[in-house]
Length: 149
Ligand code: FES
Ligand code: FES
Image 1 (cartoon, helix red, strand yellow):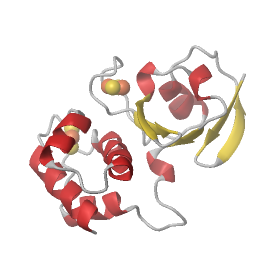
Image 2 (tube, helix red, strand yellow; image 1 turned 45 degrees about the horizontal axis):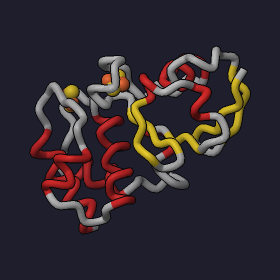
Image 3 (cartoon, protein in one colour; image 1 turned 180 degrees about the horizontal axis):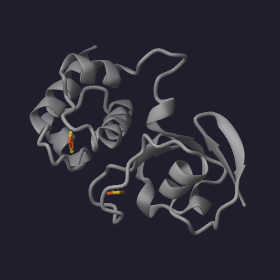
Image 4 (cartoon, protein in one colour; image 1 turned 135 degrees about the horizontal axis):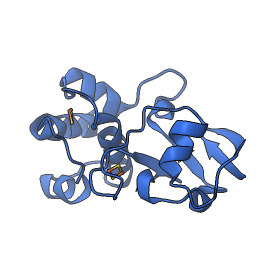
């Protein structure tokens, strides 16, 4: 068993502590906005926040998240108001197939918290998520728009 706090709700989850956090989020808790892509911390599709830090949940054990605040894409909007990154994503029509996008948005939200006005170099260094649809230019434009919002 593990006691996890996800999107402000604490719950006991029947899972081996070594299980990747992604599977607890998706399979035990049923929050499927966080995606499985590579499973080896390369693509970023599984990105969530742990105490505000962007974390690739496919390669992070449940045991490491106990006692911490986990936020998934479902918890990013506060009280029904979209996060500024979500708004910029809509304004710039960023997603194509959408599969990578929840991880992308979570990574960007964490970046903007740390660096409210990131340069292109900051973006290149921090946002290493892979998008098979190639939305990188839209992502960059939306990051700058969110930073200026
Ligand atoms: S599924 Fe976690 S980084 Fe690709
Ligand atoms: S929008 Fe399709 S993989 Fe990124």
